[in-house]
Length: 354
Image (cartoon, rainbow, N blue to C red):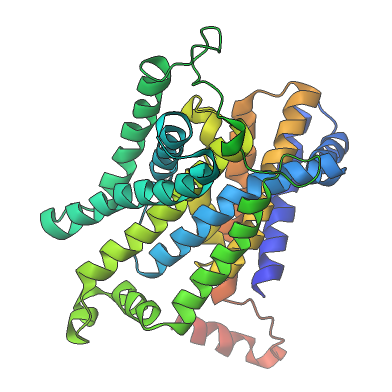
């Protein structure tokens, strides 16, 4: 039922977006064809979809765990950027030998994102500050920290004045699948992360505890569950996974630290929608992450083919989200048709009014 409703919502969103294409003077059928080719029409297109799916799946799995505990981590964007910063430091400035660069980048990148998320947990547990506020505001801190570094102390001496760091040494590059730009390690890690988070939620005591906390901290207190500890661990895990996604982007795609908009592409914010559409199910996150990876690749093809402003892409994303949210009601209610004999119509009408 969930699959059918979601598929119907996407179909309606694309049909309505056709009106937008007509308004722009573009044939909807041609736009759909370009979109399909940009997302799935070739090996390169499919690989670009998968490339965008990877960080969405890694971050979305962590957010699914967080949302199950009713801990609203809106800061995955910043946590991802912190992971990218830490990974860059290891690649360019750390004393670790070349053979250890990649493992240390991922370990410290995880810890960087995790501690960034744990600070929001400390604010909630000790200062009673809502984590939505702190995690959201910390996104801007992380983004501006990246800008400070690439325009200041870490600005590369070999990039001819551009706002980048120097390229990473080859030992800090992730290997890709064939001739694509899909990093093999993070591709496999996305699936392992989904399986791990599903197992954590469904098969462990901690998963039971965080679900109880998600029902309410008073219920957790009555059950003897330390809600504050659960909140801290949940933000630690979801922040750490976002940090790993950041390391994956700088080591597998860019091979340097760049403008935050280039590093993330809004993955941290989009992953919130990914986790929500998956109903906070880590395995469902894989499907919804692939869907949004396809949307991003197809929209890039539309921009190139028709010169559509990027703001129009936001409208398309908004239509998809609107119809998915609106379809939620169909999961809880159903429309039934009843044939009432002629003589009973008036009585039935009166009964409904009463």
